[in-house]
Length: 353
Image (tube, rainbow, N blue to C red; front, side, top):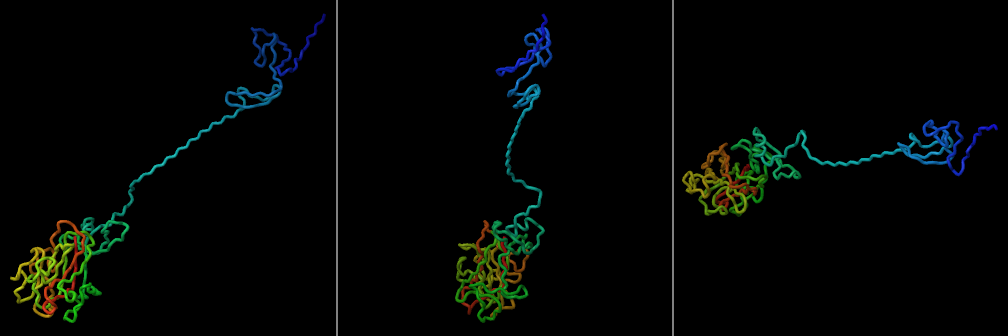
């Protein structure tokens, strides 16, 4: 009997994997090609029926649909998507202060003494200072004397009532001082009418311990220096000028006035002793006359004036124990009425340090 080899086609059924009859027998000792497997004693090609499948590849994940041998799917090198996100946020805040090498404007000097300290070669002249050290307030323009007794003096008063050769226009008399009422004085300031004391004040721009300056005046009639009826700083202790500061008054300097041929002469010429410290007064005397405008008071090498650098008409106070910044008072003192005694101030220039 003739036996024919039939190719039996196993059709897909019930969703199983089907394969065709193979032509190569196999057993456990024979290895089929990679695309075949040993099934029922024969090497048969692996087939995949129509369907959907999901799988994971080594490097990604994906989905694919395929039919037959060339279907798409995921194998070892299947398509996949891989996302890698790396987000990093870093915030850094840093605040710092530093000084560079640029030029920095130094603070303004607070006094003429500070000007001289910063520049020992500074010469007398006008300078801007900041007395209170507050940058919000305007600077003050002042004249500084850098020569007298080591320099560093801040001017607080310059009043010219008489001489246009010194400065113009002439300064008006500061109240309560007044112009002389037809007394032979020209362009000068006298005490308030009917008083034995008459004072003006000048603000102290900077703290100070010492004062120097000059005051000039014309005299009239019988001035008595320290031969007066007062004895304390608040009384008429002198015919002349008393310079003080603060309340109660602290004495800075006294300018006494006398005249020739009187028993009340300057202390150094046989008159009554000074009622203040010997280092804190000066006395000058005028000729008899009404008024004596040819020989101004306190304008030259004054009698009883302690030696001081600069000499001449300049006076200098002793140093206070501690700095003050109270106004400086310039007070005319005369213990008799105008018909007996009088003098008229023509010039004031004061400095503190």
